[in-house]
Image 1 (tube, protein in one colour):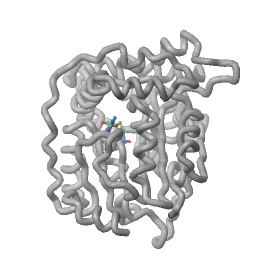
Image 2 (spheres, rainbow, N blue to C red):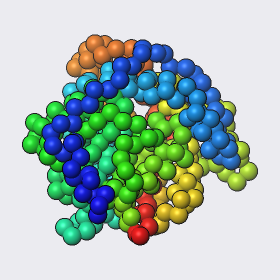
Image 3 (cartoon, rainbow, N blue to C red):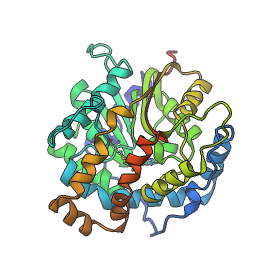
Image 4 (cartoon, rainbow, N blue to C red):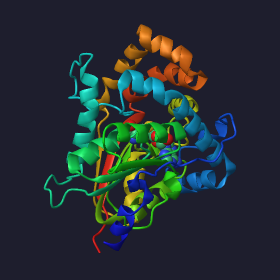
Length: 345
Ligand code: SAH
């Protein structure tokens, strides 16, 4: 409770959430981010090595620049949710249904995790880890009447997220700032709901990422991670096939991603920290219509001209979109949800 009070008096909730992020040097993205072999036994050694090296800083600068550059065009065409939609498998989706599918993704995630709708038990304080321009935060804040803090590496995203919150009369409830998910600017045991929607794939140190999610969760709080994973390895496999790794490497280069892990790697990490009610789901089939729709939107006149104006990083990202479809279809990429609960004290 003391921790919750601390949060309520955080300057973030008094309209002064204007962070001035440190200046970032312009850097290119080294291929070393994705050069770790995919080996489930030594996953944590790889990611720890990555985190302790300067390549993590360079990766984070690349992520920030990528989202600084591309968030405006995404918002123009797709709105404020920068994540997949959730669809019924095999459904034929017409143009306007995609935004509804993105909201459904949020709702299905909450349902999967068993988040209570009961006013006495629903989340009151939420953190949105890797918040984009804050679509989830504003949605959750409205739905639950909760307070929500979002963190992102992109100063442009944080600024836009705060501007949208102000414009929508939510400035007292939601607040966004530039901060690192691997070193979150929050005390322990804060949040009833720890929400990470499609940000985990950017984290070079998965054990540290999971540890931070668990640290900031309140006792009894729920953690929801919706993320891109590679397929689980078979019992006799040490790593992905070379062609699979090659496909992922090309995606990593374009989207500023480090080494991937599998859904079962996440489950093991949560188990190692004694989390309860750990559940994992494979929603790959439920997101199948998404990338074809994004590609169609990029091929419209508006999409195409915005892309040309946006910058090289965004164009490079657009060019690898078909590889996401290929990765899902060939079973290399899994769209995963992992939910669990921190033991109550
Ligand atoms: N969850 C949002 C945005 C997803 S895009 C949505 O669903 O709309 C991925 C987000 O993860 C971006 O906002 C990016 O800045 C953030 N991110 C990636 N690595 C991060 C890190 N280490 N710390 C904080 N945010 C990070």
